[in-house]
Length: 241
Image 1: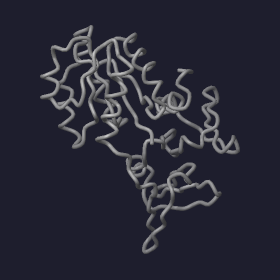
Image 2: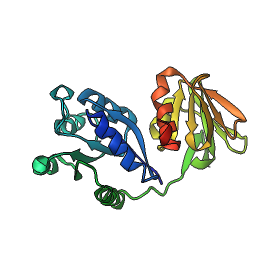
Image 3: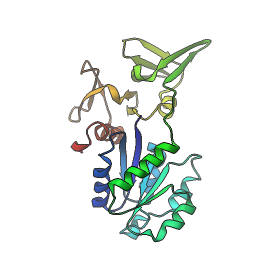
């Protein structure tokens, strides 16, 4: 099981240090870094990270980072991410707990304290047991293992599931529907495609192509979803970003 996280910090050096510390935990991958309030709220709503590491005492007041981000998110989503404050001072700890923060870590980030915090998260967020998806066509229900899906392709108002064994299954729902319901290792890379990142064997950013199944198949990605491509690269090979 892998878990996604977002770093919210207006200090680039501190954000990079957090990324470096988190590289020691391969079951966690970064979906992005936000440097101000609007960017943070937008990325949380769009990327739906499971954990958010947040600075609440920023270097610049212009970044507008504070605990009120949590309050704002309550207006838009029912289930919030697991918030972990990462800041230089303990003086906001009581206020943070009252706001719904799950943990409070001090800078510089300690590997030991980070490990305890992540284990606490895993204890309260056990891995889901469901590894299948049901595709319904009239009275026909097909149960497909998520690990067998290589990519999804939009076809008007239907979606074609292309499986590892070469089979294609058509679902009578839009790609947008599945984008919202598939787990973390599926990424939309084009208006017409969602890929299973576990099958990606090569990414050519110059040609805007993802290669799947040992380069037997290539799929174009668009600039609109370049952030998702960066997330895939960060997930598979964090040392190259």
